[in-house]
Image (tube, rainbow, N blue to C red; front, side, top):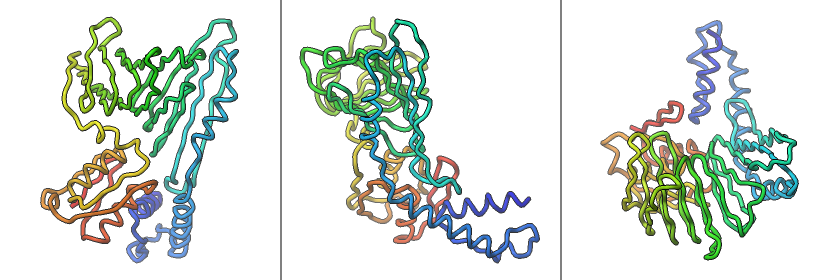
Length: 318
């Protein structure tokens, strides 16, 4: 089918490969050589334009936040940040679905939902707390949130730097659990299988439910809740690594390929499978800021020979 050729072409471009038209010349249904060259030029131009795109998310958030008055009863705001092009879709930033759900006098939460194909969103709360949200994650808080009333809900994956206030604890509701914070940096990762709360600095307590006894967590520890069994426990962890994805840059210094893959998996939220014979091979030093995964992998493959295969969210290197 002609459609299959375009899928083939798009997959080649996504992998950073040049189009080899000679492979298609014998098939009458194949796109013409000139058309394929035009598509490749357009693709390269799009990637070049998109590579310099760096949206000012904090400014956008400030504008939206300033438009929310205290009299608003219930608002749902959905943000979708799409950083790079997919196939021939160039670039889209959508701020959508701003609407009033309820006109009654009853107050209900203001819901901020962020969804990205990659990247992260940073939110500054009214009390000075900073929250980083991973793709497809949410933050929810009520209209009356203030430095004296600090209560939010997180869905998905987040990293928080909570403004210290010994008189007014900061509460985070995640699933059915409750985290009580006293001025702290920590990460939350809630999946279908488990909930992990990792502490970098400060002091927090964790409760499976608001009526359960709290677990106290020290820096370098994590509270883990197994959702299939309901069991919760404290374990030692690399809290910095768990929050790595929220940092401004990733610095790799003389790391083996297996170590690089470990960091790339965390940074890009992917699953890279590395062949056993390559695990202890090669050493890399580089810094990542806004580069896409395929850019980094192409750079690595130019330095050392390796075969890279993409399958949706999974990547294999051999």
